[in-house]
Length: 48
Image (cartoon, rainbow, N blue to C red; front, side, top):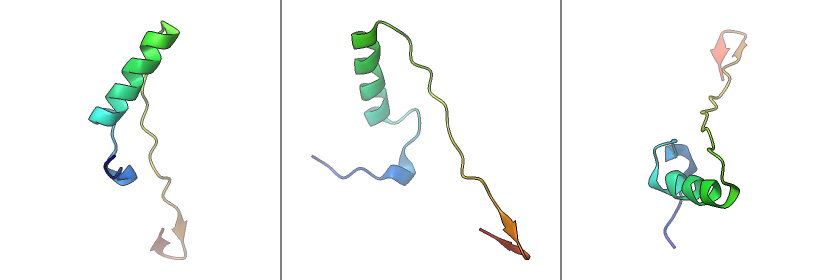
């Protein structure tokens, strides 16, 4: 099994599409994919 780089995963990644397809076949339902973005915080002039 190859390495999985979590920072490079998008909704179009082959790995995600394969899992999504399998889950849709088993459940019989369409599964919408959403992208979560990291919240930026501004603290004393610094961005984290």
